Every structure is written in structure tokens, then in C-alpha cells.
Amino acid sequence: MIVLGIETSCDETAAAVVVDGANVLSSVVSSQVAVHSPYGGVVPELASRKHVEAIVPVVNEAVSNAGIDSGMLNAVAVTQGPGLIGALLVGFNFARAFSYTRGIPYIGVNHLEGHINSVFLEPDPPSFPFVALLVSGGHTGIYHVRSHTSFNLMGQTRDDAAGEAFDKVAKMLDLGYPGGGVISRIGKSGDPANIIFPRPYLGKTDFDFSFSGLKTAVRRYIQTHLDEYQQHIADIAAGFQEAVVDVLSFKIINAAKKMECNHIAVVGGVAANQRLRERVLLEAGSIGIKVHMPSISLCGDNAAMIAAVGYHHLVKGEASGMGDDVYSRSG
Ligand code: KG4
Ligand code: ZN
Image 1 (spheres, rainbow, N blue to C red):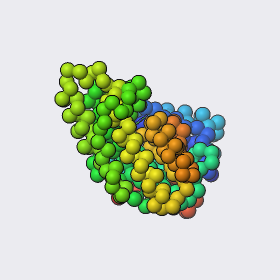
Image 2 (image 1 turned 45 degrees about the horizontal axis):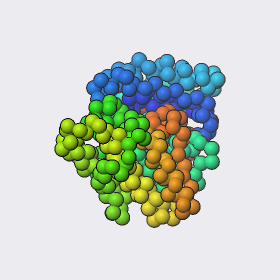
Image 3 (image 1 turned 180 degrees about the horizontal axis):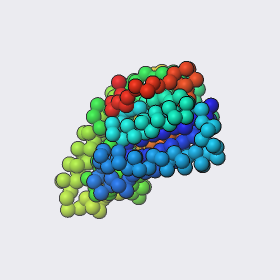
Image 4 (image 1 turned 120 degrees about the vertical axis):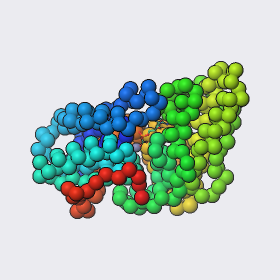
């Protein structure tokens, strides 16, 4: 089954063509970072307008890169939520109209299910059940994954998402938006042991997270070292990143142990973090647990993961109706 995937939940307009939920023929992501970065975050109204401009060229590019004729598409999968309502509506209405005019089914899917399924776009995917650490700009949670479409949430952040904490700390340090990539780049030349920040919830046996206290600790450090913190930006970045990575890797390894799973997946925008990848690989490897992570281009928002999860719903006979609508929050 050849599925066209569409993703417009936040600040990326994306389209992809995927065969049988696994074989990516094309994946196009048009980022709006340049539009939002002067504001230090995503401006919802601007995001919707940019999606309207980009959606047709991005879909055309995905179909053309796939080397297929659009008549060969069997179905459309589109992000239904969670996300920004105005942004979601652009992709969702496009998918609905595309489906209606072409006479093919469309399926609205959950963005988080998409991230979890991103590991199935790589060779040697995990076997069920496995535990997944989903770390992005909007979400941080651990899931017990029983199939492509059924998950149990084991724990999640009580305040900021991990990516959001990276973004906010980068903003405090005047490093621009989004902050994940730049913090990890600058942190490479710092020493994570020079400034020790708190590890929130590290000692707890549950799978919840909290990152707002850590963010406040960084702010307090800056305020109490106003004259000299600029010379220690690399150490601040490295120390902050190490605190986040310590908590994330500890919790996902513990979740695998608790659920007796031999496979771990790490997905979402923050899964692009090199230090997180290294640490989870090292710690899981030492106890014989296999780690699955999407390649960097499939960590952040993309439509290939949406097409993948859509396929798994479609083969169960599910499809969306013309009266269905988008939603801003999950559950
Ligand atoms: O999955 P994603 O593209 O969008 C959401 O669904 O939220 O994730 C975006 C988040 C941003 O907060 C960004 O700062 C973070 O992923 N991110 C990173 C890295 N690259 C992107 N965080 C840490 N290290 C990175 N290398
Ligand atoms: Zn995402």
C-alpha cells in the first residue's frame, strides 16, 4: 500500500510517500524556523499562514521525489492532533480534499503515535513489546508499546517537555531558537562536571519527569554570575544537557527493566541529541538491551512517520470520515 503522509502540527510543513509503513520513497520537510526565530518561539498565526503557502509545493515535491504518479497513491495519512489547531487544519483539510477528489481513503493519526512508529522506518526495527522514550518540544513521556497502534503511557513530564527546557535555556543564554541543536553543539566544548545542576526526579522509581526546576536552576546560576557567566556558556550548556540526559537515560533503562523488555526506542526531536544517543546506547548495551533510534532526519517532525502509523490503522480497516475534526491535546 502506497501512503501519502502529511504533517502540519507545528512549524514544519511535511509530506512523504511510504510503502507498507516501512519503505520511505520520499520525505520532504519544509521548516519555518527562519520565520519564527526572531520571536524566540512558534507564532501560531504565522505557522498557519506558512503551511497554507507550503502545503501544495511540498506535497508535489514528495510525490515527484518518490518517482511515482499521484494516481498510484492508495491512501492519505495526516496528523489530526495534538498540535496547533490552525496549523493542523491546513494539513487535515488538504488531506480530506485530496482523499475526496481522488476517491481514496484518508486517516487522521496521532502525532505521538507517529513519533513512536518512526523507528519502523529504519532497518532492523524493534520487536513488540518494547518501551519508548518520546522526547520532543511538546512532549516527554515513556510508553509501553504493544503494537504499532497500542501504547500504555507509563509516565510523563509534570511541567516542561525536555525539548522545551532546551529551548528555554538556549533563550536565557541568547543562543536563539530552537535551542536543542545549539546547546548540544556549544556543550561539546564545555565540561559537564564544572557546573552541576539538579537531576529532577532521578531518585524516584516512577516514570514521571519534571524539567522546570532544572530550568530555574540555570536561570539562578545566570543571575548569580551576571558578570562572568558569558565566559562559561559552554560549561552551562554541557552541565544542563548532562542533567537532562542523566534523567532520561536512567528512566528509560528502568522502564525496560520493569517491563522486562529487551528493546528500547528513543524518538522525537530530542532523540537527535548526540549525548543522549551515546548514553542510552552505552547503558542499554551493557545489560544486553537493544536500542532503536530513528536517523537524525526522522527524529524531528516529518510526514514519513505519519504515513507509517496511518498504514497500520488502514490495514485494520480504519479510515476517517468527512465530518472528523482536528484536536489540540492528546487524551
Ligand atoms: O519532535 P520535534 O521536531 O517537534 C515536536 O513534536 O515538539 O521536536 C522539537 C524539539 C525542540 O524543542 C528542539 O530544541 C529539540 O527538539 N531538539 C533537540 C536537538 N535537536 C532538536 N534537543 C536536544 N538536542 C538536539 N540535538
Ligand atoms: Zn513532534
